[in-house]
Length: 447
Image (cartoon, rainbow, N blue to C red; front, side, top):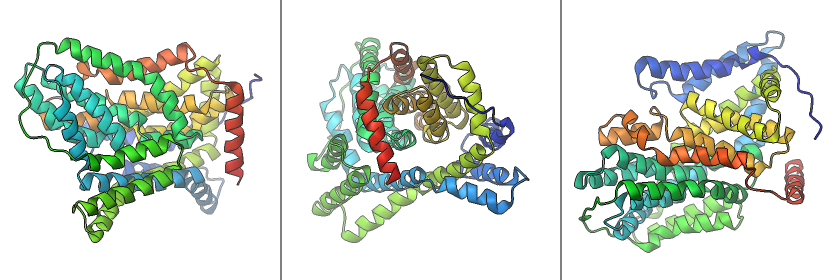
C-alpha cells in the first residue's frame, strides 16, 4: 500500500470542537450534574464560534460551507432515520410491546440464575427496542426488586441491567449508535451487525458465566402475575428479521411502525387518532438528536474547510505505522470523544468522518471500522459514571453511580473483545468481496 501524503492542516481550526467539549465537561464538573449543559446548546455555541473564525472569508461563504456540511446526504438521511426510529419505538411501547417482552422474560427466569436471566432479558429488549435508556428504565425496577429479595448487591443488579442495555445499543438495527456508525462508514446495517456480533458475542457469554458464578446460591421466588401477549412482541421480531434480510432501513422502520400500529388498533390499545398522535410524540422525542446531528455536520464541515481534519489526520497518521495501529487509532478517537461528551451517538457522529478517512487510507473494511466505532463508544458509555445510562440506573436505585462501576462486566468486555479483534485481525475479510461492496457504494452515491 502506498502511503498518501496528508496536509499538516491547521490545529486552531479545531477550536470550536474544543469549546464544545469544554462547555459540556466543564459545566458538568462545576455543577456536578452533566445534564445542566444541553448538547444542543453546546453545539450551537460551537457553531457560532466556527462561523466567527477565518476572517479572510465572508460570513455568507462560511454559512454556505456550514450548510453544505449540515445538508450532506448522510447527515440528512441519518436525521430522518432517527425520527423514524423514535416513531417506531413510541408506537411499539405504547401498544404494550415493551411490557409484554419484559414479562415474557420474567416468566421464564430460573430462580437460581436471576442475574443471568436479567442480563439476557436486557440483551433481547435492548436489541429489540434499539435504546439503552429505554431498557434501563424498563428493567431497573425489576433489578431492584430482585436485589431486595436476595443477597445480591444492588450495584451488581444495576450493572447487569446496564450491561444488557449496552448489548442492544451496540447491535440493534434501530439503535441510533448503529445508524450513526453505518452511515458515517457507508456500510449496510446487516453487514455491520454480523461483524459486530461475532466480535462481542464472547463478551456476552463470559458476562453470563461471571454473573452465574458470583450469584450462585442466591435464589428468590418472583411474585406477581407476569402477563404477556406474543402478538405484541411481533413488531420487534419483524423489524429485526427484515433488517437482517437486507431491507432498506426506511422501509424497516416505516413498516415496523405501521405493523405495531395495526396490532395496537386490533387489540384496542390505539384508535387511529391516538396512533397518529403517538407517532408524532415519537418523532418529537428524536428531533433534538436529529438537530444536533445536523449542527455537528455543519461544524465539522467548517473545521474540515479550515484545515482541522487535515491536522488530526496528520497527527494520527504520524503515529500509525500499520493497519492494526490505524484500527486502534479509530478506537482511541471515538473513545476520547465519548469520554468528552458522555454520549455514544454524538461521539460516533463527531469521530465518524475522521474514522472513515483513516479506514480508507489503511484499507480497513468499512464493516470493521463501523463496528469499532460502535463498540468502543458503547463500552465507554456503559462505564462512565456521568453517562445517562449509569445516572438513570443509579437514580432509580438511589445509589452512587461510582458503586456500579466495579460490576460493569459487559461494557468492559466489549472493549476487550474489540481490542482482541484488532490484535488478531478478526474477522478475516475477502478482499474481492470488499472491493465489490466499495464499488456498489460508490455507484449508489454517484446516483
